[in-house]
Length: 338
Ligand code: 13P
Image 1 (cartoon, rainbow, N blue to C red):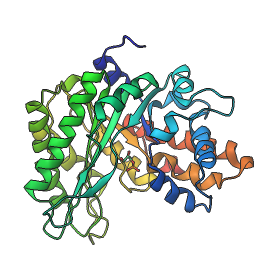
Image 2: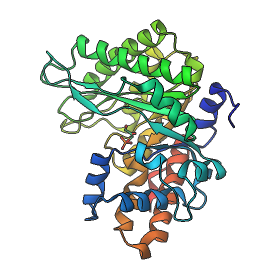
Image 3: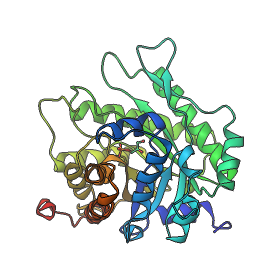
Image 4: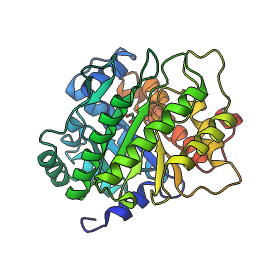
């Protein structure tokens, strides 16, 4: 696959019926996930959990690519095959999270900036050697207490575009992820307004920094009510406002939009993606998924860190992947949950 063009990798990641499994939790985040099932976050337990996910039979029917973390791309199956190589053999494209998490943006009211540009060119070249075909960088935008400011949006967009250009230089498809967080009391219209400004700012920077749109994917939030908002918008409202927002901001040259789940529970992330794909109007981009929690939740809870639960945890993962894939095709319904 070494000679496959970046636009072909981007297309393969949003192939019919398929989407991405985000399994790139940083050491801190995976520790929280494992703590939720009372499992200690050792390197071996993290490896075992990722092996459970990746060796699920039939995963490639629904999963086009997996995003790995720095530690994970250097790990292997219990048979000693590097994960990236194993996934390729299964027809699943390995990718890599390359940002180094967030820190406080100076002179702002608690806004975040994503770190990781220093030395990125060299790190990308190493990840190519390790088998990665695509990359991910997440910018975090919080709503509330005066945030976000245009300063916060500009610096994050500039950083995302710097990352994306470096990826394409290295031959890696960048997944550009500006995540407007669900946390807060804001309503769906405030999420719409912020998401629209974020995407306009991001695509302006991508253009200035000469990023090739056909060779990247966008990983955004859905336009959705804040978690603590008393009035929660239903799937129909989420889908119409999300699609309208993208029509205003995302060029048609982008091949695919792969949503993050962002803290939606598994059925809600399916219902919303289904409504987004269920409309009459044909969108110019594939509308797919790059879910972390909304793909892994049941599998993690079923596993409980016990070897005897691996098979049932894998069954939970494949069942959820089948439902998310149905939602990506607009053929999911809530009674499929039973
Ligand atoms: P969630 O789907 O759990 O939000 O994770 C997706 C992701 O990769 C966030 O960066």
